[in-house]
Image 1: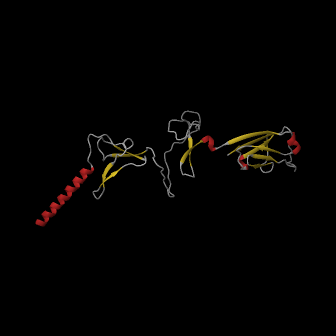
Image 2: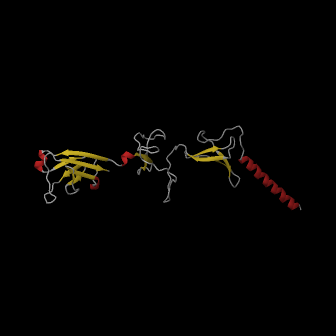
Image 3: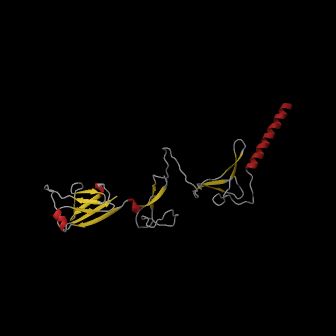
Length: 235
């Protein structure tokens, strides 16, 4: 009987320790305001692990904010993405998908609810400071996510050239086209409105189109004074 009584006392003592530990872990200050990590540096949430050790949890690097849902209650909290990064942060997906569902589809146009490509976007701007849309891209050198004007995603250009007497005499001419790509499928040359054949009627080098008149019928042609050439390109 004495042994049973002693065991009962030990059990009560253990329960008492648990109660004290639990109360300590959930101590609140009725006079304090809600905890808001985003507004008060150093705010923490007090926890107790499965061994009864008291620990403190706080948000880091602006990714997560901690907000108590009841004034003075530091054990009832809400975790929310947001805030400001204060250091470089990298997430290695290690071959797994990193995806966002529920993204709104942009309809390009000028009607109600439609968007146009942004023309006033600036670097490191906050939302609401510009109009239209930009495109997110990845800087391969740093891994950083950056934004790109949609108008810069596809570039295009056009150059005109009118042949002179010297070009007619030489039956040869070059046209300077600054910024032109070297991919023949992205460059189009026209003579008096008729398209010339890439790689045959003209060749491409850096910023230069070289006209190559042909002598073999039925595709033969020559350069004459006042011939009008147009070069169109995209990239």
